[in-house]
Image 1 (cartoon, rainbow, N blue to C red):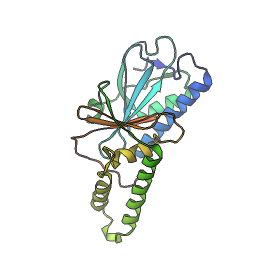
Image 2: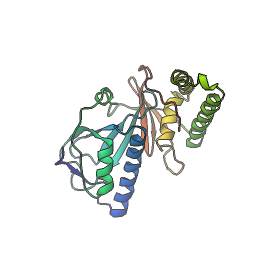
Image 3: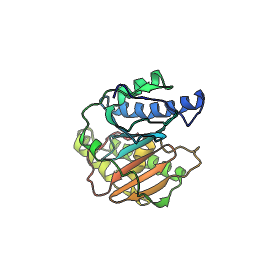
Length: 232
């Protein structure tokens, strides 16, 4: 995979567009690395596609983060890309030369990297209001912190905090759960300056909160695991 080089940007866009695309991708990768220095991402794109799918696994209870990185140049991706790489190494490559960076070498991926959301078949379930979604996430984070502070010091065990996080993030919200909403908020996907409103989509056992800046997907029948005890 080290021979594969990709250029960010839309079509024949100039350097400013490439820089913005690189900055957004770097911000996404940076968050994953901040939460887990050994984080990996799955990269997927068919030959000739104008975008690279970047999949990550933030520590928010079984969700997958999906970021589409626009590509430029003749034919975009000349050959299909399907690899799992270090998020930290990809971040370094993008930050060093967003105009044309080389993919890091592949690594052995974790179990989640082998089970990705489908490419097609998504049906819109509902449109959501970005301001209200952000408010719901912020209110739940505040409740988590308040209830944590209300516990006696000896009661703030990992098990107790995990149980509290599960209670809060498992709450339903507009056809999904607050776990998905929180992940989208923490990943920077819920901004107020996008033209497209967040939408809830479904495909088979998968549901997905899509925004102009990225998506959070989850398999509805999958149990939550690896909950974060420090909501952001």
